[in-house]
Length: 458
Image 1 (cartoon, rainbow, N blue to C red):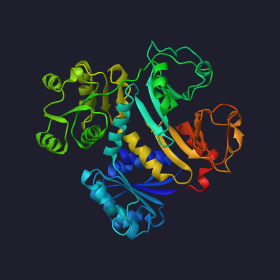
Image 2: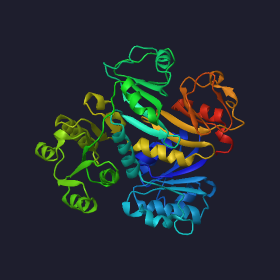
Image 3: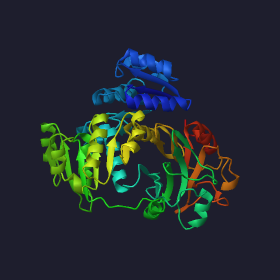
Image 4: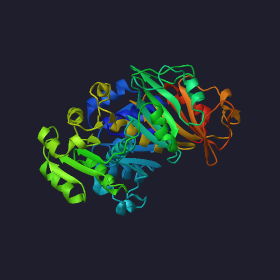
């Protein structure tokens, strides 16, 4: 697949790395010559320096025979014009644009992106994706990561195991035997710096971070078994009233259960703007690191503090300060993946990585055919793939025990018709079934071969 990625910020760079690793023909475009040189050296991509919205630059990038343009520069307007030029001049069939301004994202203006107006096939808003991820974390406060699959009926939970977890030092095979009626299955384990797909004989240890699939109705029981009792969120403090913080506060106000929310913002004009938009949220103007302001915000009684400013260091320090001030749970927005190992040591319960959430969202729309959903784990170290089984797939018609998945791949669930099944050995995978897999990054191409997605996919 021939793909042009415009903009080499965090999102553009990571989606270029991801798609080039999957042997796509990727060209990147950026105005910064140093960035394009680094991309050409570090990634398996071609690089063009220039303004992405200029027809001659897109022409040099190969737009005449491109299958997809992803416009992810720092300017909404440049991204819009890039898609327009790609459509009008080069007839590129699919265009994805990253738009950050809330003014462009209101539902009443959705007609703006029709082919006869601004021909953008998919609009991606990183801020909205991050806000959605934050809401997911708040809904399962005992987890450090979470995502839904199979139309919300299957949940991926990331759980950090403590020393008092009853499931420690027990082979996973025995856990399945002990809890036969439970849908939960451990598909990934991070031990130290290593992420792997566990074998049935593997044991879990204190300090492990594990990824579990479970049915939505089994979430509370699953959390209890792994030492994480479910807790309701009734009081939330948000630090940072940018697009992300405002989206989270708005979403909390719209929830049927009444949640008391307070929002702290350093910039006075932005705080006033947030106060005008929000109905029930109390907005405080001041420094989110101030002990006096945290006390005024009721941090000692807070069930969670969510820190989503535009600075990683501020987010981490404010999350630590909020936890020390009494918040039961701290969630921090962290762009730099090298800082994520610090979360546990600093007693931060969960982090949100905008790069991972945005890459996952773009991949959902890049991939056609039978791949229905994708979620990127960590720093693109693994993927969760939801896909429909084709009749020509090597796995079609075979029981789970006979399917030769790569070592870094585990099957998490199989949906047959309207019923979701735990992937036991004698379960037969058939044409039309929907499966959900955990796959380490280097095994994703082999998964695609097994699913035979490439035939109608690229």
